[in-house]
Length: 151
Image (cartoon, rainbow, N blue to C red):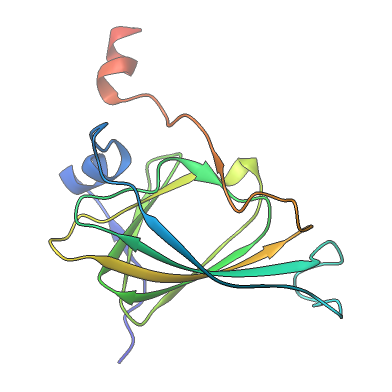
């Protein structure tokens, strides 16, 4: 039986969205990169390159807040990914399940490993060109404390 992504609520949502500054970063292992010879109709005419990476997030690790210039397919191979959006809605994706992330700055998110074991993911990046970054780091949303201080 395959698990479907589950909404994540409560204290874990805040832990995932606002990790401590010393949270471990992921390790990224490039596996393959190539130029598309044909257009993939579902992805659009602007996808010309594909990159494949293995991403390992240690316990407590985070990707940092970011977005992708191209679409992305993530397969969770081991562990549990907590995927939090800029509106602080979150979902968990367990091993054996996938996540498709849309492209663009309007789709800012953070990936976090709240578990005690490493999170291992394989990502396929569908890129507009060979020079496109795989991800663009951005500042996260305000913490609840920052929002309260401004009121």
